[in-house]
Structures are given as structure tokens and as C-alpha cells.
Image (cartoon, rainbow, N blue to C red):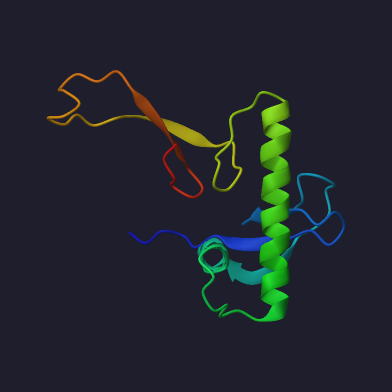
Length: 123
């Protein structure tokens, strides 16, 4: 079974960025598909963070930067409201997953990790 590729959609009215949605949650405007995926956005951010050559066009970089600014603002907004958000993408959708045991940590661990359902990052 193949996983559906999440396309980045942009709201021209309020500059909100969403994955695979038709209408903006912020203002109700119809979203414009960009043809770019969330994995390409993550790759771009990695290239910037590690000072690697950027392999995307200027227009694509502008969309990725809008996505970064929007997700950072959403993360801050969630923190102010006391809502837990993914530190990687700012999503509030995550699952609680029990940590696996090992010889070092013991067989019985009561700890759980949150796993973001959008970007699959553990935190």
C-alpha cells in the first residue's frame, strides 16, 4: 500500500499553508495547490540548515519560506493556548506511542512518545 503524497496548498488571501486541503481554515478562501510536496519542503529546510546548495527555484523557495513562517506562527499560537504541537511541523495531530524496551532501559518502561501524524517525528 502506497502512502498518499501530501501536496502543499497556499491561501492567497491570508498566506496560510496547508497540506491537502481545499478550503483555508483561517479565512474560508479556496486554496491554490502549489504542486510541491511536504517532503520537498523538508528537503529544502535541510539544505538551508546544513548550508547545502539549494536545488529549487526562487518561486518554490518563497512557498517553502511561507510554509516555515506559517508553521512557526501556528506552533507559537498553540503554545500560547496551551495546546501541544509538533516541534517539526506545528501540527496538533499526534499519537501517543509507548517506548520499546531495551536491555539498557529495562523491560518495563512507562514512558510514551508523541508521534506526529503529519511528519512522523517523535517528540
